[in-house]
Length: 119
Length: 110
Image (cartoon, rainbow over all chains, first blue to last red):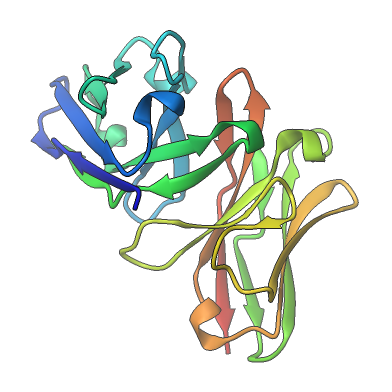
C-alpha cells in the first residue's frame, strides 16, 4: 500500500524558513517523480514544485522560484521542501504527491501538513 | 501565464447528469495536456478520479467519465449521488515538469 506521510509544518514568522519532509513507502521511490501541491485556506489547489526520480531535475512555479528548494533522498525514501523567505501568502496545507510519469497525473496524495506564516 | 478555467460552482439534482469543464484562458485543451480530475471533500486530501483525459482511476465508479468537449476537457457525472457533493479540480500537464490546476468547481447535489 502506497503511503505518503508529510511532516515539518508549523507556525513561522514572515521571512522565516521551514523544511517539510515526506516519508514514502509501498513503492519504489526512486522510480517516480514527486511533487508538492499546496492549498491555501478556503482556496484551490496549486502545484508548487516537482522533482525527477533521480533528483537531477527540479521544477518550480514562478511564485516560489528562488525561495523554495525541492530535494529527495532516495536512500531514505524521503522527499523534502526547503522553504525560505516565507510570506503570508505561502500559508497553506502542503501535500506530497506521487506522479505517474507516463500518463502524467498524480496518483497518490499524502494527508498534508499545514504551514502558517504569521507574526 | 497559463490559466486553467473551471466553473466556480454547479448544481445537480440527485440522479441527474452534470458536466464540469476545464479550459484554457487562451487556446484549447487537448489530450496532449493529459487532463486529469480530482475530487476533494472538506478536510480531506484530493482523490484521483480520471487521468489521461478519460481513464478512470482504480475504484472510481463508472458514473464518472472524462472526455474532450470542443476545446475543453470535461468531467461528466451520470446519475449523481449525494456523496458526489465535493470540490472538483482539473490539472493540465504543460510539459517540462510543469503543471497547472484549475480553480476548482464546487458541486452541490440537491
